[in-house]
Figure (cartoon, rainbow, N blue to C red):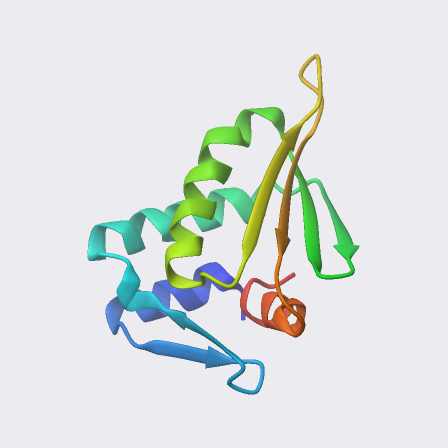
Length: 119
């Protein structure tokens, strides 16, 4: 199940979502109803704009269009509220080159990302 679909479902019944053998838990109650709605929109926007995905040792790197800087930063801020075990890094290239969003975490978080974020 893709992450934005999971977030959509959970936005109607906020609960604690557990995955990856219960090693990691997303606290969807960390976001207000308005933040969950914004996160849902940003998730859809972010994941449909991914141009390339690279697997990293501890997560994934997503290449995004340069214009996605602010939506990606907003998404990461909200995602970090419910999943504080993720680390986020945004890097842009010169002259309007690609934007990279790196999502990393502790051992085992990569499986969680794959399952919950659809990576």
